[in-house]
Length: 278
Length: 280
Image (cartoon, rainbow over all chains, first blue to last red; front, top):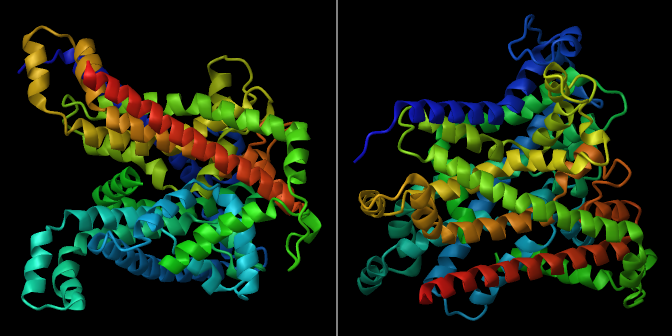
């Protein structure tokens, strides 16, 4: 259609590189600071590629506030894995039900209320949640944390969007053939929905890995702290060990970055679709 | 699902609104003492609360347009057909902060801003700029937090723009190009109107997000210095910490009403704009 001026091309690449660099800088700086010996951090804060590399900071992570690192890691994985399974199961079924029978009383209301609970300042939800958890005896338990994390509006809208696109004819023809509701769900919908399930699982993992505030509130002791909460705890101590903080930040961030780089397209799509509907 | 939404979504909201009408000392007991609007009266008499409202609104008013504008420009650059090679890399690097755990992001940025050895003040020194005071100064703390929030969230808005950019019919550009419209005219007259649903969505989404700003003020500044970053949600949290449940939930309710009002009116205004253009 038209020829682009080479100087425009160069300018665009220059801009794009500059933007990428400034977006990535904090992450690169975090990783490099965690690898530097203490004396270099204060001397050469801008040097991104460290002169001497030391894993000393990572060794200090073995115990945090008297609790072995493995315990935090176990808590994180345990809470995240169970909440992923539950969230995906619950939100997908709910979205399917609402989609299949949109006129059933209460379903429209349910969606509206769902939106409302997104708008409510999250941290203030925690006061009554604290009370509810207390009443049910779930305070300080894994189950309490996991159940609360299952409320996933983004995942719900993701499934809603997908089910809305399934042609009604497919479902109708199956039910004419005498397939039961359960059969339709298992034999027809589920195989079609595999990609969207994958996306939802990834999204939930990323979101719940990060979700530190409910963990902090529902926990009664450090025994149920996850890695991000351990990081918060470490960072708010009076005595500051800077490389240690950076090392723990890197440990908290690394799994997410790896997952994101491996599955980038799905994750970006999922975030975009989930929030577009919400 | 019903049960969960009601138990952890709706019931807590009702409960916390109910708590906002009780005396703090009795809020958690089985027989709370109702004092009606006393909590609301006392928070609206509290200059720190009024100040935190002002801070929250100011932060939102500056941050939302900034985020949307930057996201739009980023989308124009990253979605442009000129960048053939490396466009995946550019898109990834812009989106990466969105998935970085918010706790790690806030902690790392707190240290990036460190006056003594943080890289940002080092860059300022190197360029011979005046001393960078970052989070320690009453005047610079909000822009500093705004920059962190921009870094963290702009990727999401950008991706929503880019997705919508790709949906625009290419023939419209070609037709406009043949009629001699330059790049600026094409952007103003085709791209922006075509993207208006994306703009609307991003604005509403960003407004809700920024009104609820919390993590950065808890981790990075604890509301300081001298209450300069004392957002409503953070102030309510600190009241909660002091067992002032009545006042904390009253503040929460005020913020909740504010979020609903502002996002509804934003939706209304933006959809009105759209319909008037439709009639012309």
